[in-house]
Image (cartoon, rainbow, N blue to C red):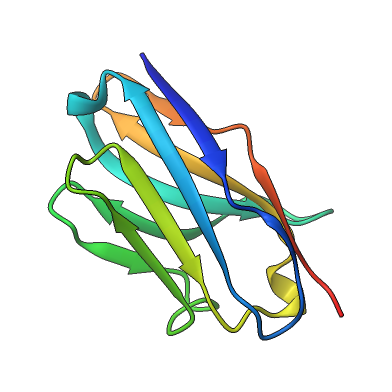
Length: 115
């Protein structure tokens, strides 16, 4: 079992920055994938960024060059640095980690970009 706790969402003006964090506890040695997804009202949940155990990142085209995913050395916390935020980045952001037995989701954190 893996437990996830997210933090860092909030309200920011266009062009601003936020940093999301997701701390995993429990069976963290079995985690091979960590990622961030988002879901805007009326839309499907979509991948924002992900990072593998080896550190290989992957980004949605819509956030390339603006968002950076990273993790700590222990491999139990994943971060999403979001710069140059746009109105269309407004969504609930969810942390997702995967183990050989099951995927796990965080509770979600609201990111609102508004002037």
